[in-house]
Image 1 (tube, rainbow, N blue to C red):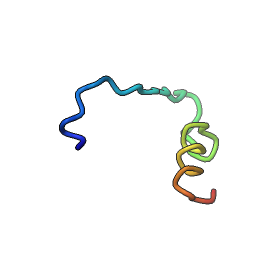
Image 2 (cartoon, rainbow, N blue to C red):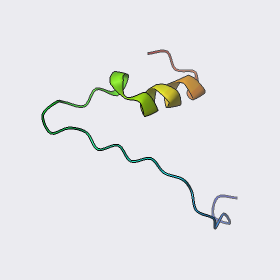
Image 3 (cartoon, rainbow, N blue to C red):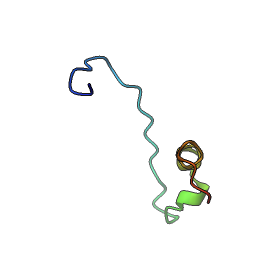
Image 4 (tube, rainbow, N blue to C red):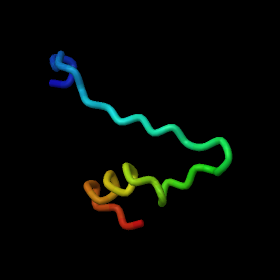
Length: 41
């Protein structure tokens, strides 16, 4: 099914700061992914 899909897929790219370490708990996109997957953070 995925291999047959030939349309564009919208993608969000978030580039982290070089000055601060990446914290997935503060990342809005990761918060949404966790909510959809039912993962408590």
